[in-house]
Length: 347
Image (cartoon, rainbow, N blue to C red):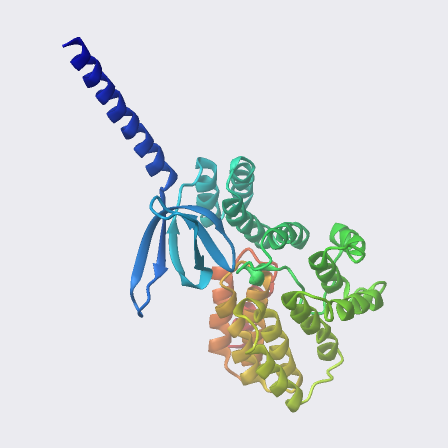
């Protein structure tokens, strides 16, 4: 009887232990990944532990597989995973337009988050916050960290480059001058972009862009090459054939790299005084961006101005109003308000 009790007790202990380890295993594999199936419209849901998630692939571990599973990022539809209280609060504050509070919460979240891939997701949100404040210096610093961690990032549309004729000022200018000599190609690209039309650094910036247009890293090469075309727009050195070639080249770029080039193409059509096509081209930018990048608002106001030039005042007013609705935080929102007032005065 005593032996039987011991055997029974050992059995209970084994059951409890097994239950405990099963719970640990379930906690380990609490992420959920929904991926594209082998046939159109089909879906596969995996309960797993996400090990890494980059712009090229998602790597995860399941309870049944002997080795990690790799899924191409293009096949990932959605993921569900745990978020810290700070991360949830940061996302909520961002969605409510409380950007400073969002940054405080997201900074706390990134500091306590142990998963590298999730820290990147939080970093993306922090870049978006800086862009929403029109703070290119902070956005540029954060974007460098993002790109260094994941050169295949799907968030290239957030890179804070300039595509108009403006130049950096104040602290951003001082930092950009130092970044021109940096070993990091992203830092040099940002610096050359910000200083391209600065009287004291335009020549050096062009030299840097020429170098980057020939160095390894296709994305950096392409953006550097397109940045140089800002000079052609400023000097109005574009022909119809030039614009046709540009348009054809843009379609070969990955979507995340297209917004800036499309903005330049729109400006090119303005030079040629083809205002209707210019407006249509500018409007491609906010459709592609889907982000807080100030270029989206700038493209919409340029589209509105182009439409106003050919007498489409109602359509132009609609775009100005949309800027005030969607991009009220952008520096250019004030100009949209002025354009609306001018149209109203003409009635």
